[in-house]
Amino acid sequence: DADVTQTPRNRITKTGKRIMLECSQTKGHDRMYWYRQDPGLGLRLIYYSFDVKDINKGEISDGYSVSRQAQAKFSLSLESAIPNQTALYFCATQGQPQETQYFGPGTRLLVL
Amino acid sequence: AQKVTQAQTEISVVEKEDVTLDCVYETRDTTYYLFWYKQPPSGELVFLIRRNSFDEQNEISGRYSWNFQKSTSSFNFTITASQVVDSAVYFCALSEANNTDKLIFGTGTRLQVFP
Image (cartoon, rainbow over all chains, first blue to last red; front, side):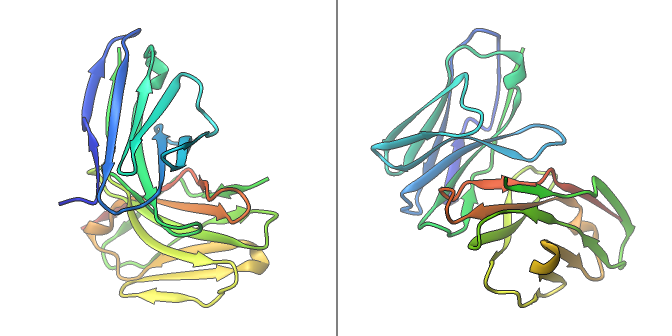
């Protein structure tokens, strides 16, 4: 089984809808991250969390919110989806500071 | 300001050719980490290597090798005897010890290996 899983893997939604992307990990890591990838661009950080009570904004947090329900779960919500949020979304985990981040398989989101 | 530049947007080679993917970074920190990730057509991100700023030794792993040069702020990746399965987008990334470990990614280099 994969260490970092994301659900759904693909999602099509309409403008204005609320949508949640979920991330679960079995690595026992405290640190979790949400990134988005747009064509021709690298990944950009949306939110990150260093433990259940610690949530921080990344460089592109507008229009997004997150919830850290447990050490193993970190969800990303789009409160009112818009077409320019169409992207590939990745969750990542990290065990200790400066260690490698390991990524989930990604969620492809299309907002019509 | 921190930045990662991958100037090569796309590279095409024929199988068995050697290919080098360039990565140039900018940082003011003295302690930082550099990474390479592979993104095959299936879309997932596969970790390849992590290197800290105090270790300038080159690394070889099978057909892959990495050349880290602090003097030129570069961390280049070479694939020897490329294979079709190497076709992917490759990302270089930087993490600064004083910047909460956020990964700063380059825009990626798409490598196409033709048979």
